[in-house]
Structures are given as C-alpha cells and as structure tokens.
Image 1 (cartoon, rainbow, N blue to C red):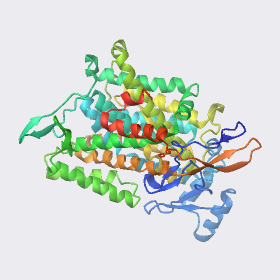
Image 2 (cartoon, one colour; image 1 turned 120 degrees about the vertical axis):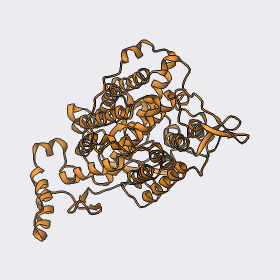
Image 3 (cartoon, rainbow, N blue to C red; image 1 turned 45 degrees about the horizontal axis):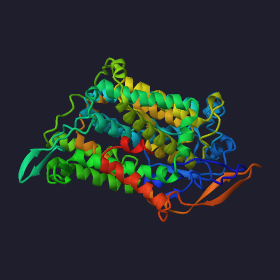
Image 4 (spheres, helix red, strand yellow; image 1 turned 90 degrees about the horizontal axis):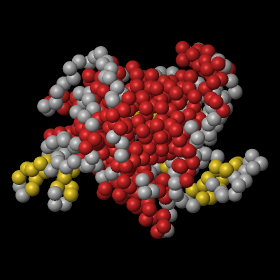
Length: 536
C-alpha cells in the first residue's frame, strides 16, 4: 500500500500473497482480494452426493428472484425451503448471510468442505504428540474440544469463514522440542555395514522438560500471550511490522521443516553420525507403503480432491491393519474417557529463562498462521477481516481472541495451541462467507469423538505422508513472492484505486534475498523454529 496518510490498505494477506487455487495450483492473486471472486459465490447443492459446483451470479436482491426462477422450473426442494425460511431471520441478520451473497445451505456445505479437508488432523496431531508421552486418546479429545470451542467463539462473535484448531506447525515443533524421538524407524541406521542405534535427544537439556505437564504449560503460556496481546490489538500490528521478505518466506521455511520431519518419521531419512543425515531403508515395507500414500495425495491434490489427505490415510492404514503387523482397532465406537487436567501449576513453578524460546516460538507460529491464513481467506471470500463484528470490534480481533482461548482449552486437555488451519481455503472456495461455516465444521468434529478407537489405531506411516505433501504446498507459495503485484487502496474520499507495488521479495536485492534465504534454510538445517525466529 502507498505510504501516504491519505491511503490505507483495503485488505490484508499472508505477506501479501492472496491465495493459490486449492493451495498449489497457481496464484489467484497477489494481494488478498485483487480481482478474486468479484461477484458473490453460491454453491449448488441440489444433490449433496454430487460434486461441488461453484457458480457466480449477479447480486442477491432477496431470495425471491433467485429462488423463484428455480421454483418455477422444478419446484422448491427442502434445501430451497430451508434457505427461504432462514433468509430475513434474526440469525441471518446476525451472521449477515444474505448481505454477503450467501445462503444457509451454502454455509453448511462449506463447513462440510472444511471438515473434509481438515479431518486428517484427527489422526496426524495425536500421532505427532505420542512421542512426547501424551496418549493419543487424550490428545484427540483435546483436539476435538479445542476445535469446537474456538470455532464456536470465533464463528459467533467474529463471523469470519475460517477454521480454527491445533495445527501441524505447533504440533510438530511441540513434538520435536519436547519429544524423545524414540521411534525405531527413524533412529536406526547403518555404520560400516552394521545396524546401530542413532537416536539423539533433540530437546533442550533441562530436566523439568521431561514432564508432559511442563510441555503443556509452555503451550498454555503461548496461548495466554496471544489472548492477552489480542485484547489490545497487538498481534495485527506485529504481523504488519514484520518485513515482507521475512513474512513471505516463512511459509516456505516451515514447509521445508515439516517435510523433513515427515521423511524422518517415515524412515526415508535417518540420522548418520558422520554426515548428519542419510537415506533410510527405502525398501522397508512401511516405507514403501508410506511413499504410496504420498503419491496418492499428490495425484488427488492435482485433481482438486477435498479428500486428498483423508483417502490415502484410510487406504494405507487399512493395508497396514490387514497385511502388516499393525494392531487393528479394538472397536468402531468407544466411550469417551475424560482424563484429569494436567498439573500445570507445578510446571509454572519451574519456569526459567530457557522457557522463553519455546513460548515465543509457538506464539510466533500461531501469530503468522492466524494472521496470514485469515487475511488470505478473507481476500478470496471478499470479506473484510476488519469489518465491525460483535462488540464493535473487527472480526479479526475475535479470531485472535478465539485462538488464545482455544489454546487454553487445548493445553488443559493435552493438546497444542490453536491456529487458523491451512485448509480453511476449502470452505471459502466452496462458498463460505460467514461464521456459520466455522460453527458447522466445529460441530462435525465434535460428532467424530465417539469414533476415537479407529482414529487412534491409524499407524504413523499412514499419517506422516501428510507432512511431506504439506511441505511441498507451502514451498509452492514462494515463486509468487517474486512477482510484481498490484494493491487495492482506498483514498480519503472513499474512492478505490489499484496501484503497482514491488514484489514481496526482491531477490535481486541482497538485503531482501539473504534474510529470505535464512528464513527458508535455517528452519530445516537447524531442525528448529524457536532459536531462529526469536532473533527476528
């Protein structure tokens, strides 16, 4: 945006990047809402079993004109009657569904699309936290409840169509910082032809970090920091203050970090005392099956499937259950056992200067995920993230507060801090424009809780391929950062103008290229996020 005081940005984005079509199929825009979905979007769900079709239409001058034409052709279906009943109601007025060019059925289907795109986290997050010493049933319950609470709060008060929940970035950092990396598939290698134990402890060397309570206390403090700063609008200002070359390259650096973690969990990469890393036993049955899962995810992503992560996980897990030495689920549905809350007071009593690094690392991961993905999704949806919501404050204000509050719930229930999930684009592309999309997704996650015996029985080699594919998707955002772009600004007289702007990262300028390189390279090379982010 222009620096003149008479101009102000009309939208935010993830370092200025608008979005990619279903994450990695070419940039749709370079500044949030630059020409994206200039008309409102609705989703035709006359048959829910059919494929989703997204159709633009001219305005939304009441449901009478749009629904009347359809009713004249084929009669109003139960979906049409539901939309007609909802239009003009108090809930419609609160969520501004009709005002944003949507309807109830579109919002509900968008919530279903968000659930389908993010449901792989029900398996992946508990798998990642298992090495820390948190039972999968405990972290699964914490994931579901924190996702439900945060989406209910944000959807009701903030009215923004994004999905909140414990994400892969914080969970991976949490596991690598506090975990013991005891998995035999990633801690053995070959030296001089003989197999040896190559396990190393990558956690910081202070004894209290051996406890689950300390790790969860660190997560709670990072969430409390987010909540406290959000009360005064600080997170938005911090995000804007960070240089664009750093802000725009962070997703790619995190992607490289996630991919390396995924390859190590698969056994594709193992530790070597001489070279640091080396290729693992690629012909091992579990490794071959995991690589098949990676290939399926890539192919399904190429065809824009909403189930690109879920379907391969189900297939690989099923093969492992029936053809490999992997325990089958004990049952399909099981009772939910609520574990006592961890003793976080003991963890707080043992805080030290060494605790600053993990607290700030998880706070910064959450900050950039929440701000970046939220503003990008708002740009695609044509929704102003700074539009006034409940309490006279912006919707973005409530998103940060909901993330902080959800992180407190998550820590009290054995899970990691809450962020805006990267797959939130699925709901927006399906037509979601309001908080009903988020609320419906939260309810769907809550419904899955009784099926925890199946979810916790999924082997690690079935869920870890997701990390590799997510890494490639985040890395694919980098080329767009080097392109020339335009920004939308609003002048003091209210007129909107499009102006040319420099690229987010000017790789011809070493003062921008070198910080961007360090951001991308040091995360996987140092196998850490916290020690690198804090100096920035």
